[in-house]
Amino acid sequence: MQFSFGRNTATSLGLLAVLLWGTVVGLIRSVSESFGPVGGAALIYTVGSIFLVVLLGFPRLRTFPRSYLVVGSVLFVAYEICLSLSLGFAANRGQAIELGIVNYLWPCFTVVLAMLINGQRASAWVVPGILLSLGGIVWVVGGSGGLSWERTVANVSSNPLSYGLAFSGAIIWALYCNVTRRFADGKNGVALFFMLTAAALWAKYLLGGEPALTFTGPATLELCVTGGAMAAGYALWNVGILKGNLTLLATASYFTPVFSTFFAAVWLSTHLTASFWQGVAMVTAGSLICWAATRGKAARNG
Image (tube, rainbow, N blue to C red; front, top):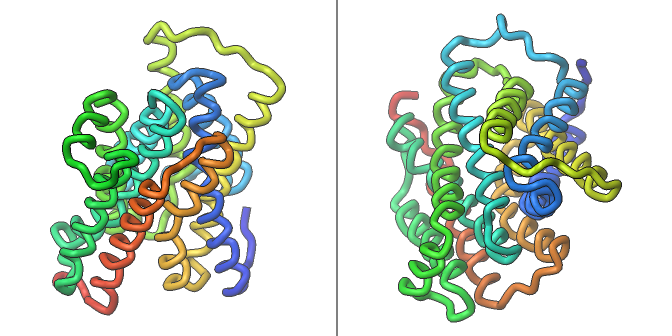
């Protein structure tokens, strides 16, 4: 399905994608409470796959570079599973929102890996940017007392699976962003990758002795909204970065943690402390500093 968009329209669609992505943490957690962590995630990516096929058409595999299909598939599927299951296995809603912030370490990791993999140059500001983001995570996970390594370790130890998945997901997505930039050749395999993610999650659901799925009207509607929001986010972002104002979109995307936290707190009826918001601000500021440190810096091999 082909559409023609002007620059301003494409930029607006890209900004809408940022807002849609900001709803993901709250929506995924809510769906997982209705259908279980694994079953809920499998349903979300199944619905998302259907939406993506409608929006983007069925992927034509012959047009994709083989390296992109293999590497992109593995990294994308691994990331989406890490994200969805980390939120689903969170001990409570407040912890799920914390894990969403841990996931937003990926912009800083993307810059670091761009320097290591793609020879991206950066100014010395990248170091305080990374430290500020990491400090923000410790601030968020440390609880209402603010910066405390001991409390952070205690909180992580209370649910190492979820925190490990969220942190691993941040690294995997940063790797995906760098590797696929080399291999994708302008192609967008997100519809295929959603299908593969759904298949992997259904395999885990069927082989893992998960509880039976129970559908209710509100839960089914929420599932459709979640799958639709994720699919539309990816589809609209692709339009934005291809035809819109990339600088504006990149800047706006770094504020996703703020909107995501606000939406999740409202959607999940969860009160967040002032120190939590301070940590969110630190992660966001650190990511922006990392991005600014690479602005106008050409890659050594580019």
